[in-house]
Image (tube, rainbow, N blue to C red; front, side, top):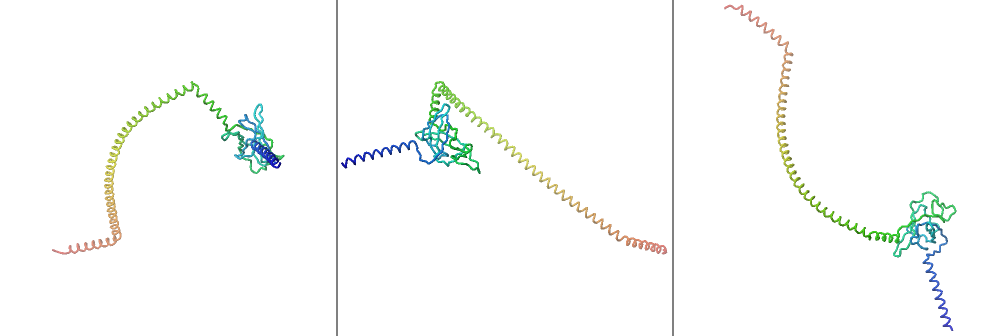
Length: 296
């Protein structure tokens, strides 16, 4: 009896454990959060882009919430996102993108601010009554979203690309382009060879011109040397003339000084010379008188 009760109790306990594990799996798949409070915002997309309920919502690359509901409409798809932290302030000027990442292409909504909030402004919380929806994302705000990185768009673009380039006309055009490119490459080779020959000819001409230039340079050096030598000779002759002129100038100065000395001497001894001449005249007169008085 006890063993039967034990078996029945074990079966019931296993059933309860299985139900609990199943419920936990359901909560994990739906990304249920037991937050005390949160706020919601509505984002309008042109298409769902593979988004599902419970997908992650990131702000600046950090998980902040999940997708609460997806409601398709005639003109767009309305996605209701739930932000878990009621005190998280998200600027109104943001870019909302639906991106796909991972190996299973899981859709994620990324919210990236375009401009920071003005400094020095008192900002209310999203759940406050005086929340300014023109400044931040408040509870119930509506935003515009766009499709970002999408694997579906990549596959669609690849399919369109493959369809375009598998057409016979495109293939023929591509083949003709390759043939023309090959011909152009051959012509480029010929042109390169001609340019090489032209370069060699130009080098020879430049070499001849360089030799002529060297000859002209040597002649110029010889002329410069001759000119320098002649200039030196003229300079020596000019120096000799300058020395002679200096000597003549010195002699003239000495003669002028001698004349000045003679003039000074005559001026200073003029009275003496006059007296001497007068004495000589008187003496001559007396001698003449004496000579006259003498008889033969």
